[in-house]
Length: 306
Image (cartoon, rainbow, N blue to C red; front, side, top):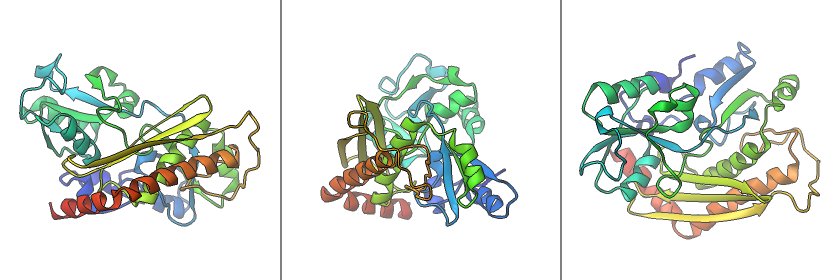
């Protein structure tokens, strides 16, 4: 099914001003009982879903990082070694803000379209020296050989939910919920609940540069979150962590009706989900005390004025 985000290709995503760019038509079909479940990239799903819907499964995450795809004539180069004023294509304010900060010698311009369209725009013309795409999308399409480099968190942190697929269902359909719940990957669920709670608390979306990086190690969930001005000159970045299992004594009690930032995960202990959600909220609150709201407000205003 095609969505509004697939059809409007001459406008930057951040300018369209529609929160459910890639989901609305699918959710309409779900509401009309034409389909029983829909699959999205989790990063396309708003942190608050329409009433009556829930994310019934979050699948094991593919590589969530962003990838550099160089124009064939620049083979062997890196973003750092591209000539001054080389133009890099990306439709993401988040990517542009971080990469402007990291590589001030480069220029960044909007590029829209699905993956093949963007790769064709790169290859067929001389407009772009490189483009930035999600590594997960390239891998899923079997185009991993186009990846020139995968950007690490010190260069560019990723979008909330990036690399994970989500299955959205009608919240009242308990049979369907039970059926898809076996697809949940617990680590991905906890990481993405923390990320989505962080974004929701900041009231962020695709019209502001918000980035995250999460991982789980030694029963600790680590969340790094950051906000940026549009040109990358201002930023706030912090890391927090929480225990996701104290001595193996996690409770198994789960409230099957409870959604956390749109996710229903009936097989994952409630206290782990609560801890992940709290981590996201606490990190957002920390950044808000340091001035995140002001940075994001200005970014939103500047983006609206562009």
